[in-house]
Image 1 (cartoon, rainbow, N blue to C red):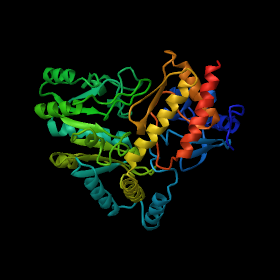
Image 2: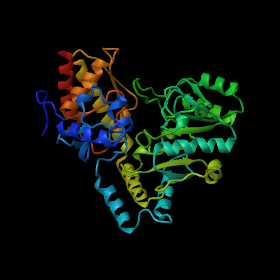
Image 3: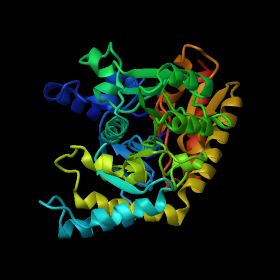
Image 4: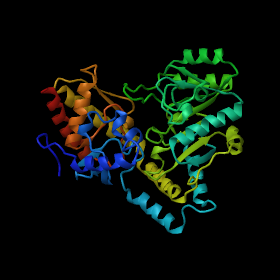
Length: 418
């Protein structure tokens, strides 16, 4: 059933499930998908548990249907339950999955990544994006025998202690003692930092563009990445591209390639297997032996089923020319949303790349108006979140976008009316 402005969704079963969860799971739903993290504002507008998913949609436990622009926070890149990917996974599962020694499917995927990612001479597999960013920093430190790492202010590279802030619970001073911070798009500041700590910096790590939370997303300035690459080369610093969110949504050869450089290490995760649990670090030949020398592994890191799913996913992304598709669909959607807002006297800012767009109503500095609009969209069946970049998947149709714009227009009307 499709809701209208007069029939907002209700979440009785979802709230009942959350009450059960709170009794047996810390916070009920831990991590960034939990209601305590500030992603769901107001909490009452959102369901908390899903029941099924297909293509561009999911359904919550109360039977409400949503056009999903979070895509599982990114992993849904082709569509939930993509038949080609799922068939590849089933074929592999019928043979083997987690075994004492790895399947050659791992080699097949590594070869595909080396052939696909412009800067890749090898691939190393793990499970989460944070696994790869941690491995990348370990690799840089081992290769350079230096300790310090430069971050861009406003960064997010996972939840390991080295990625967090000193005032976060459980984080020790030693965990972040060697972290340095520079503004985004400021080559001069980076150069000054490299000079000040000459011979001490192991790595510079950044996402391909700034897609932070609670702030308009910002693309790299002309020549920014070329300047970063030059400085890293001059100072012997390993350049790490955190492509966990943006990877393969901007460029199948990697977001470093999209912005005109080659990183030393590239971290992939979300789009790699259409939801099958996998991550990868790719890198240049000069760092191959360093990675091989590290002790870094996990119980399920050589699981064969996600390797097969990833091969099918990347192959399908190539067949679709997915980055071009995402640019078209994202531009169509964000242009329509901006126009719909203007029709109600509101100013919607859409920033970042169209494939990973960020939204903000600019008519209220408190952000409460924006939160109200997002809540009205969710109650009517379009899943946005208040302060995070959004994602597209290849199953999204022009009809889906038209329906999204219709619901968004109803939501704008609701907030404009007060």
